[in-house]
Length: 591
Image (cartoon, rainbow, N blue to C red; front, side):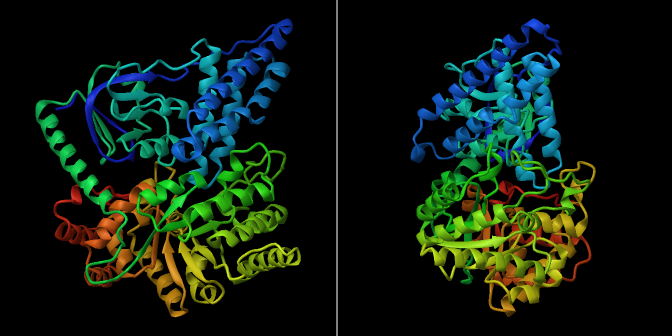
């Protein structure tokens, strides 16, 4: 039996076995030192020089990559450079040094804590986890200030890399032939550390509790990035078992990736489009390599929150055009800005809210701040002249709100037409179905748009009243809750009755245990993280749509999560007896 088992979050699937070593153990505790009055300006200079040195290290790593070869790593490095130079971080820290006579390290720590408080109120987990990037950059600066200007070199070490966290600069130096897995103490499912791991295609865990305190380095580890755990000093039986699973998974992974470009069509001829969720144009290459047929969701907010100032129309247009051209003739669907009333934009004062999840966010924020909204709409419209572009509005609650958003879009079209600026006058426009009110109004909403995209993460949260970020109730965030299954079915039926298509773009789309239910609806498109596409397409090609429809008919009458889960599990074991052990579910099947 293993000496210890540490729990983490699997962000890049697979199995790895080997000796471990540490890259870094974090910045350690920061001493709260008050600087003498006559030393304040020299302390400020010390902070500025540390920030500039870390920015230079990121820029140096960035120069090692070109935009096409670097892909995700280029994007992450650019993001970290922006964070490093953002006055929200260095400017506020300098203010604390000069006004409160804090040491540079202490001032930076306090600044990060203040930013973290703001981010903690953000509804979207994707945006909340960008806080990990801010922490990582700050940790790097603190290490420089403390004399540890760079992390320990990996040298010629071979095995499983452990770290408090990994910067993009760290990750660029990783050779997958020598570093065949890593685990970090920090990071979340959608953190950039996870994105980097998937780009390197090595098994990885993040958020491993007690990693730095429990291990010294040199221990034999098993990284189980299928079940999200780290086994320390396994016994012979465990080692033999995992080596066999590792070999089987490698063969499975090779098989599904080799066929990823094939269409996703069931054994009995039901075709479903499989697209990707992305944050930026840098991910376009990953989408195509993974077998994605386009992009079903571009989270455009990341072009805003990593900046010190708001992007202008030209910057957004160039970014959106690059993505549309890179993926043409594949579809690219831009979701308009989905942020809340949290203070994520420099220089813009917004109201503090006790409950931002139910406050001024998404389409409500955009309608309130039409200057920001119109700039983005014009950029998307202009990009539509260069590819197969669609637009969708998030968090629509009813017809009146939708018509108001559409009227602003129409005004943007008229402005472009008056200026003889080209755009696709027939660009499809849809909405995200994320609220119970949108489910109940699905028939009326379907008459107003060209497509629906069901955001299952928020739909589950709002329908079940569960915050999946709250550890006390996260287990109740269940995609196969009978109410959720019935709600999605109602939306699909109303949409198809009005002749429009339906996509699912939440985590349900990447969950093998939810796939039979979605195929049975049937939804028209799935949009998911690029790395999950090969497996989902493989499952679709080996599924029987008629069996999925039969399963759904029984599930719609089931009263509990357990009963639906058992039906799904039985079908999967029947259809995929050899592969089912490799399926990573986004939910607890035993709830």
